[in-house]
Every structure is written in structure tokens, then in C-alpha cells.
Image (cartoon, rainbow, N blue to C red; front, side, top):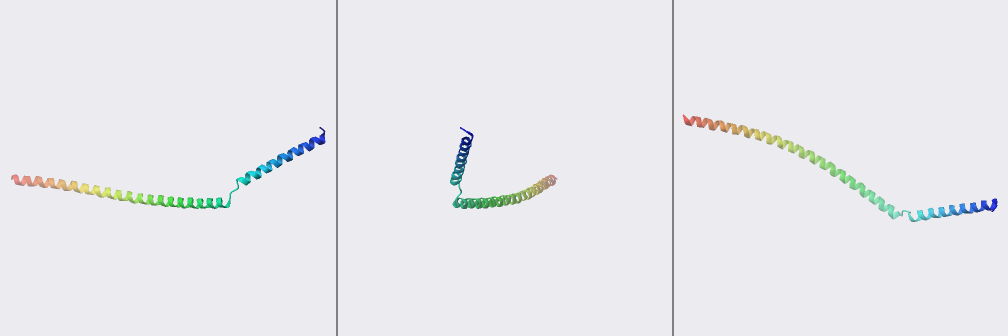
Length: 108
């Protein structure tokens, strides 16, 4: 094999390799191409996901507001309970004093 034949054989091999690579690339892109229906479906899914995220954010905000309201209400209820218990304690003390006074007066 002389130099010219070697160059021609190398050129043919490189051309065949290039052609096979180009054909394989075309074939892969042909089968993996995204259709307009798929794009429309992806856009619809993206819109639904966006709406779901907005709904989730609204629910989280509502839950935080509701939690704050309930915490405030609980704090107020605990304060009222404490005041009521203190008033009951004082009333019991006064009632005990009255009983003692009445017993003292009835013994005389």
C-alpha cells in the first residue's frame, strides 16, 4: 500500500465514521423530539404546580394567622383563669373568716 492509497483509505474511513455519527445523531434527535402536545402538557402541569404552590402558601399563611389567634386567645383565657382562681381564693378566705366570726359570736 503506497502513500496515496493510505490517504484515500483513511479519508474513506473518516468519511464513513462521520456519516455514521451524523446518522446516529439524527436518529437520536428524531426519536427524542418533544411534540407540541407534550409541550402543551408540560405547560399545563407547570401551571397546575404553580397554582398548587400558591394554594399551599395561602394555607400556610392562614394556619400561621390562626395559630397566632389561638395563642392569643389561650393567653387571654389563662389570664382570666388566673384572675378567677385568685378571686375564688379570696372568696374562700373571706368565707372562712366569716365562719370563724360567726362561730365566735355564737359561742358568746
